[in-house]
Amino acid sequence: MALLNRWKSCINILSKKNYKVLALESSCDDSCVAILTDKGEVLYNRKKSLSDVVESGGVKPDLATIHHLETIPVMVQEALKETNSRVDGEDIKMVCVTRGPGMPTCLTASYQFAKGLAVANPKLKFVGVHHMLGHLLTSSMEYPELLESPFLSLLVSGGHTQLVLTENITKHEILIDIEEQKAVGDSLDKCGRLMKFKGNMIAKEVEAFIQSQNLPLHDAKYYKNLVRTSNPFQKPLAKGKNAHAIKFGFSGIDSQVRSHIESKSINIEDISDYEKAEWAYRIQHVHFQHILDKIKLQFLKRPELENLPLVVSGGVSANLYLRGYCERQLKNKMYYPENLSLCTDNAVMIGWAGLKMYEKTKMVNPMNTRVIPKWPLDTLMTVDDG
Image 1 (cartoon, rainbow, N blue to C red):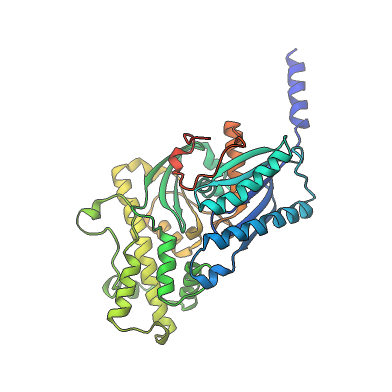
Image 2 (cartoon, rainbow, N blue to C red):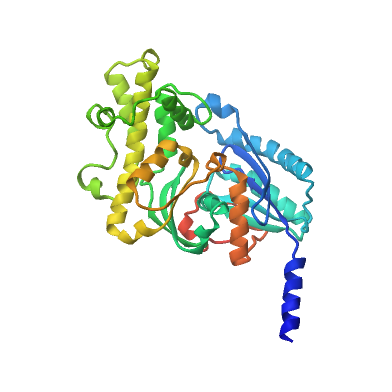
């Protein structure tokens, strides 16, 4: 009998057919579609950004929503054709879509599209995914051992700056959060615009510009003068009682940059590229050193956290200077998405997070659910599903 049971078990394992996951992401201005296998192999991964953002200097939700409504169905059609896939509940068994947080109308564009697929294909599992859980789990695609024990995540993007303790895939504690709505990516973008940088991803443009000028950052004397002695920009929440506050805050940095430009009557377009790069590096330094200072304060309060792996994820995690700060100043073993395109918003992370959540909980979303524009990660499993 024991031999027969073992034989049946082997037959079940061998007969289990791999399946595919369709994933959609539209929480902001990027329309993203991916198809991956249940083992995490990426078969299709595309993103289409809204070109209007380049000219407008920021996201316009109405234009972004129209962009998603026009783009996502075409991208899904293209994905199915390129991967020879079928949304039938057998080949593609699951559709994972960002449910929140994000811009309400942008989220709704892909969430309702995914619902339509699920209604038309009753066998299709419909899974709404937390956007930041996607970022948090990205590195586990390459390092699955992360999911075997608790770990920390530094989530840094245009909308979030958080240090999170993950006990398991469904239980998360926010250790440090932003005191206001301005996150590190948003602040870096605003400062970049004040310095006349242009583009769809301004912080990324600034980083590339700094690198192009080959500042002698390895020269200790030069570096000290650059970021301390001659740096006119001050770290936020660094004086008085705020110096001991365990929270992130970036709301005053762009005001410092604007005030400095106006007080010195500086025309940014007239200064040399080298001097502009020094300015940009100082501004980056103020942002990143503030983050590290507050993390170290948390570690003083809870020393056991220093022994946990630390995942750095979100759009700003692609910044190599930030990675360097973390490596030099923290003892934790670091993990980053090796593929820099997976640092920014993408549908692969949504598919992977949805797949992992389903494996853990077997939960799917009913058809009467709606998007959740404001959704703290520590309420992942307690949200009203109506």
